[in-house]
Amino acid sequence: MGSTEAIKQAAAEGLGLACLSLCAVQDLITLGRLVVLNTTLPRLTRHFYLVRHRQKHFSANLERFAAHCVAMKPLPSE
Image (cartoon, rainbow, N blue to C red; front, side, top):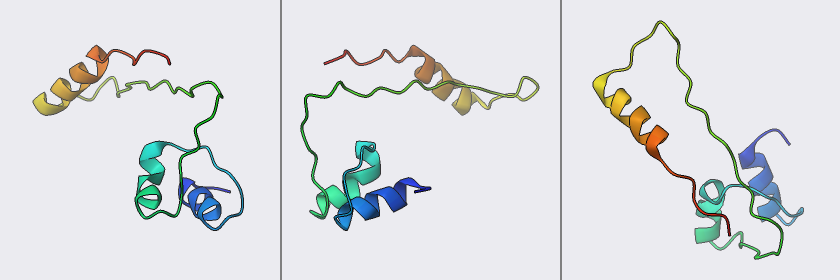
């Protein structure tokens, strides 16, 4: 399947299980079409990278947002 939306709709229709971001499926959880399964599987993590074009300049607001992102501490592992 090529998109998060297709995967979550397939799971909502009973075609199988899916492992997706809570943010991506919150709407269908709220509607009761999907449920979160608690498992003993290790917690999944993702790494994000802040990239920018070296010849472009950020606005003041974007600079503040970038500084905030860089300052964020990872959540402790469960």
